[in-house]
Image (cartoon, rainbow over all chains, first blue to last red):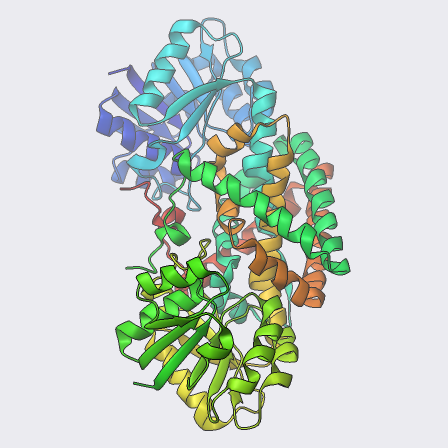
Length: 302
Length: 302
């Protein structure tokens, strides 16, 4: 057991998966949760994500020694303001938001003296959301990045052991660097996928039905990403505006160069560009961050 | 048995998968193949893709009643010129290229009187290529589009039964419409994925290793697409220039609108855009063209 009472504010995919995993690993005596929606709280209780739920965040954190903020990034500040006065001395507050600088700015002012605030971000998720979507193995072999901006060593070590206990590989990182890295590996790819799916949806000449029927040619991978939680992602882009706009700028610059190569018929440039990108895939598979089964092994062979 | 002798020009992922599947289904008496590289021909023989291989395309088509052109789109014209004089009367020539109008323009002039040319495109593939990469189930439940521009009914019916016999769902389509639909569902998504992976590779501040380590946040789906065969894709973009540039134009227009919403903090626009794209994903899963397992079921749960 690493914590006595763990409290989740928000009971979606990430919190639900954490709850199931920590219960499986026996890392806490009691799990308390809350969510704005009464239906979410009911489902969470029924699925056994929590031992008990409360109607408000202020009640939920009472006596908890780990509080996990698992709400959209734009809601973190309001939650922190609500729970601040009710946090137990010596407790640790962490979050699972996809942006770190904006969350720190919004949350830190509300954390009282004697409470440890250690921002975090597990790099795991699926296109599904809500209290039904969590599963215990979500974090297995995935990275969890913790932001160490002067955290107390004992609290940081405890939170690290907690994440490792549910399968994650923990690393620490500086907040601004996190936001730039994630703009590359996550935020910009999501925006691009949303855009491409939106374009396909817009095209009257290529009916919806054709886009869907013939999606196996590449498009369906984009639709998986573009099926992610809209509110969560709205907040991510608003909260990581600068880094996302910077990476988007580089993306369009490169895209225009390739577009020009297509227009002018410069096959050598296209081929050399496409050859370079193959190596990155090999690196990801070798790093254990994806499967090398063709098509992710998603069933063509079964 | 639907054909007596089937001949593959090119022995990569698609031809190899067709060969294995048609052998499994007993659709031909003999399979003959050729490829430019001697090593490819050896692997194809060793894997049992072909009963025999020949050093030239002209020899390979001798006496074949189905000839499948399975080379990059840009090589189709030269292959057709080579085999034209050697095609058996009554034979059917088809291809598996991802672009149809350019292939028709390049191939049709070389097809002699009395030989049926029915262009085709199976919407199936993986990020892997070469003679080792094929597998018999690749086309199962995937669409194969045949272009019917005045094909002889008997020949078209025979080719349709052939594709159905190896698991595909066959539909006919007009060539220009095919090229536009595929620009949306395949060609533009591939170009975008290549671009995003190239951008990530370029960024000095975000080291390669970080991009790879933290790829699970979304980027790794792009890298799968961007690991596809560089020569094949070079030819696709050059051969489907107009439609790809048109869809790219729409894509950048939408991307700029979303970029502006991020810059101005217009959360409502972002949220409503992202909500709309979710429905498309549901359609694809319901149409049986992808799995609804989270993350394509690629192993987090195992």
